[in-house]
Structures are given as C-alpha cells and as structure tokens.
Amino acid sequence: MDELDKRIIEIMKKDSRRPFVEIANQLGVSEGTVRSRVHRMTEDGIIRGFTIKTSSRNVKALVEIRIDVNTDTQDIARELAGYDGVTEVFEVTGDQDIIAIVDVESSQHLNDIIERVRRYDNILSTRTRLILKEHFGEA
Image 1 (cartoon, rainbow, N blue to C red):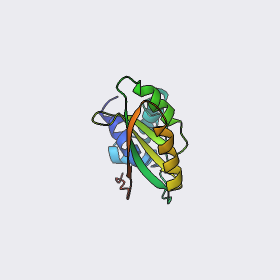
Image 2 (cartoon, rainbow, N blue to C red):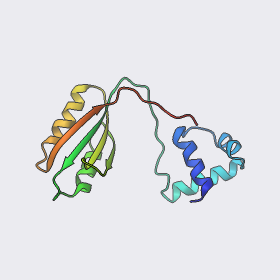
Image 3 (spheres, rainbow, N blue to C red):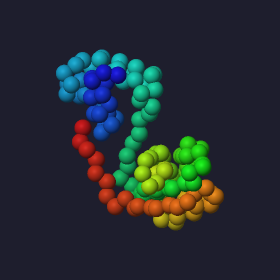
C-alpha cells in the first residue's frame, strides 16, 4: 500500500459514496486509477467493506469492559461483536481491555446489552459512556 492508496482510503473513510471521478480529480490521477486501486485493496482485504452512517435518533454509547487477566480477550471480543446493536469492538490498552460501540434504539436495549455482558464470570467491570453528539470530518 503506497501513499496514493492511503490518500484514497482517507477520502473514502469520510464519504465512501464519493464518486471515483471526484476522488481522482482531488488527487490528480485518472478515475481508472482510483477504481483499480479500490478494487485491488478490496480484493486484498485492505478495504473490508463499506458502511453508512445514519442520522437516526438511536442511543449510542461506548461500553468499556475490564476482564480477568487469565481470560482470552479475543474470545470475548468476538462474542460481543455478534450482539445485535454492537457495531464495533476494539481490544485496547489501558485500564479497560475491550471497548464496544453500541448503537441501539433505546436505553433499555443498551441496558440489556450491558446486563448480558456483566453475566460473564470473567468480566470484572463495565463503564458506559453515552455519546451525546457526533462530528464527522469533511471529505
């Protein structure tokens, strides 16, 4: 992956629907170059998918999870990633071991997810931070 690939990805992270011709014009390359590079990065697994962001009135939160030191963090992270309403899961450094991004339709649904997480014997604690406002960069 070279510098041009990185620049294409940065633009697409902000707006994955942006036409290849606009990306090409911004970067000073042909539309075919952008198209072939995106195709190659998708085939190589560098780009794993395209997502949408909605302006819904959902409840969004960061759920920070601390687990027992003798527990395989990856197993719990994979399981959490399968929960309905959990959009992303990260293994992190610091006081917490896992951070899950939750986007659900109600605070009750958020609470249900937190309660489900707390049922694991190897979960030491959770800390939830509600997302009050999102800011998106411009492409």
